Length: 211
Image (cartoon, rainbow, N blue to C red; front, side):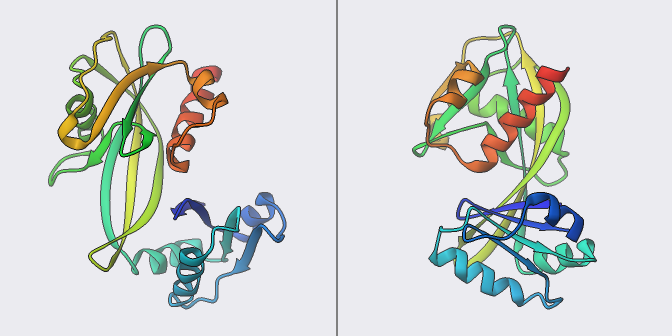
């Protein structure tokens, strides 16, 4: 299953069995079979550009790999990596950038692996230099438009730990704040935060709770 955020509406590409688990269609949930023609997605893009009334959109197919290949072929693909960083007190590192709470992340350089890119980006954006790389948490996808082109960005997320507390936000990347927060407190209060960032935090929280 793939979960792609388009204008903050999650689009799920999945098998029929996975679609059944996501729940039935309703006024807020659009669930449809894939037509087999990739131009079909253009109708979904146009719809999500014009409305935010759907809680989610689900497109299912017997051949998920082929549907994903068709979907990706409509975009210019970009890879990024980032980290969910905790300190010895169990607090999470969050940054405030361009009006939203976020996690440190950035594009993968040519020849760079996702784990190394994630470590580099966290260091550059927050000033942390003593980082312990943990496990791969999940991958997220979101789309946007740049110079008239549709972009699909895949971000590879990793857990990290540090004993450092001093943070230095990278202001040249429009980062206004870098702070340590109690995750439960953050999640309980309304904040401007992107859906894929919440997915990463929830995944990290579940692993830390169960681990």
